[in-house]
Image (cartoon, helix red, strand yellow):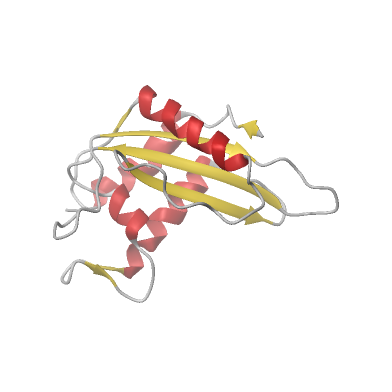
Length: 153
């Protein structure tokens, strides 16, 4: 497992806060404790890196997980957040539901009551004979979003 030290808080915050500004919610602040907890979770997930992604382990915090296999490169912080934000095309604000696809990670990104985020990203170890690269990215959010019956913004 290789933690990606090049991933700065600014890269995560930029992606989150750009989208949050577009829907009129306040920017997130970086939380070192959430980052440390996210790193602990990433380290656990890396032990089964090439298997099936486990279910969310956090009940206290909101959690976005990106478990991505790519042909040539590892996923960066910016790409992970962009992946979650791209789910907005499935979010229907009128009905407050996901239509035709998954949008829960997008909803967490823009959840109005969420004020803090901490993220970690690590590369899975390469496997002999496998060209694909695997990256695990986790962001934890406080307070957590995606509360049933509530709108994100």
